[in-house]
Image (cartoon, rainbow, N blue to C red; front, side):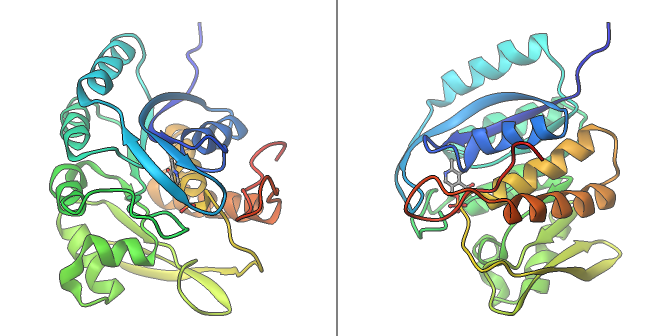
Length: 258
Ligand code: PLP
């Protein structure tokens, strides 16, 4: 019997379905990949902003993972919003046992401005997860928050994140000014600045989750990191161009029917 290609997603729940685990599962399904999902946090939010994040208790999170992974073996792991530093420790132990590619979207703050993690979270993420991360996908402001000592310089941020173990750092520029969106792929061999996309005249909710999941889907299907990063960006740009309106705030990537 053929086994399905699967990605294990550790993500928050957005009741509006724009971001979080629903974004992951829709993106994976559009790539023909099955999503295994353990929820890290419940949220209270709409398409404008997040009002509250309630982390899943670490013992329950760990128990769900143990039972799931005793039964199913993922081909890649995608990390989104993580509920607490205690969950990071559970995830670090898990990644030590799983020899598969890992995409980490270091979610720190909602597009609407609300902080989604505690003050000690960025340093803990660096220390506990980076050595196992194949592709890290911060936007520019997340890169600066992850490495506050870099004086705001994105190259310096990426260099620190690479030195601490990330295989590739894809710094997305949707939150930077400019006529185009410039995404930069940092790796040990240097930086690629050729990922330039037309800036669409709208703001989106769930774009980061969609991009990270599209990269994870490609990695699970066997692509190497650079090919997965290129294809993931292309697919996400298409999903943004097909965005749908579900509420009064930001639009949601059109991940279905692609
Ligand atoms: N809610 C959840 C569960 C998320 O994972 C994220 C981001 O990853 C957000 C909200 C915020 O998404 P955005 O910044 O695209 O609005």
